Length: 233
Image (cartoon, rainbow, N blue to C red; front, top):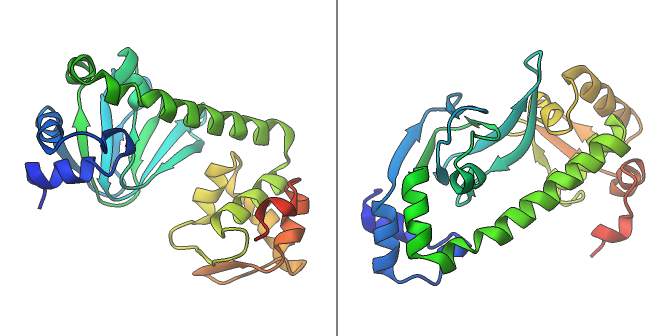
């Protein structure tokens, strides 16, 4: 299933590699290795030596920061086909976050040394990482803004709007548990549960054990301190 040809084709789904020839994609794929991680396992840990760059081929990954008391904050959710840990592959420094396999995962991993060699050979491809890094930097600034300037309730409302496409689709609670959502808004489980209870009592959301539906996106937008005009259409 994951021979050289099939992996090269999947790599071409990553925007940076779409304009490469098949032979160039195969050469790049051959420089890395396929790695499998069962659900719940750690792919790499924060502050450990560079694990190199990864491309997620199947599964789902949380990139996390762990606090002094072990509290987990999710800074990004990786789904196929997206690369991650590229900063460590660029500068050779320690991993900036901990990567946890939320589902059984198949990855393609390029070590720091091989990444550097390929960057010399295909500079036009790897310069495209600058756009990826710029996007991630903007997202991190947005998260920082949320944590500093928005309350837990506002952050929770904003997350529900994001996950539900502003009320257009239900949220699968088996995929987005209270624990995960709390980690995404940088709070504890109890604080998130209180916010959800308030939203439900006000009629802004409906929820069961398996599904959460946003009923009044305009109300949540007001609580999240964002303009409802941003998601009309």
